[in-house]
Image (cartoon, rainbow, N blue to C red; front, side, top):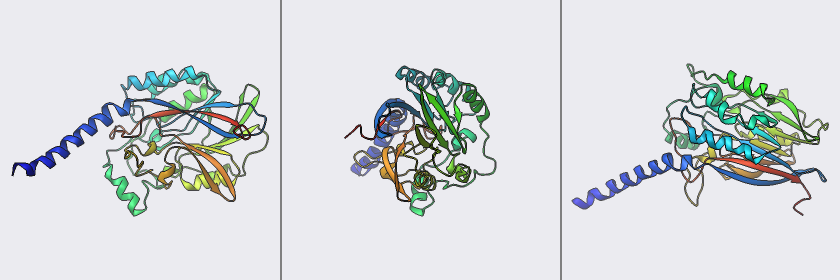
Length: 311
């Protein structure tokens, strides 16, 4: 009879150890990924773009704040923030403190659902159930009645004051040492705030390079950017799957993007065009599910180079 209890006790111990590791170590094992993207017009000088995403700041996360501040030492040409900065109604001052050195550089931002609304306690297993059911998380639905309002306006005002472009369903242009970059952004498709019809038409042709920016990489947004001829789209939201299986990868993306492209650089084809897509795995997690497994928190330094650079 004694042997009958060894398996469940062993499974329980392993699960407990996994939770300690994923929440206590890996969720705090911040790293920088470097990616080269051959996407610029021939003859154009390289551009170094720092993408930060899914910070999900909770008050008191000092190590995360220090790490984010240290990224200013990379001296990027510009910064793109792809949203979900908050996971705490009290987190705005700490986000701004962490990003203060980066706001010295040119930049742009979009918001995600967790910037607008506080997170709710949710069984992580529901993501798997919804995937099987074809619901893909919220799948573009409005937040539930009574959702907690986050003070995102403070973030917006500080980013705007620093000169970062607000790309909420609009366009803007950054000037970087004589190079012009046209940016077209969408509000978060995950809560049905995207309005692509307001920015449709593709790059104006007036800038040296153009790219799209969105928080959640829903296929409708990726299709629209790609069909309109944007050579590069940056997104976040997926957390890289957050809880992954070693040597297999992610189980869910929390949107309708396939798990093969849950993080990192890939391509997307629509309307006869192909764009590069970069999805950041982000550097945080919902405060109620502060775990990461086989998917460390990250920021990405993308070096954009001329298309003929790799030939």
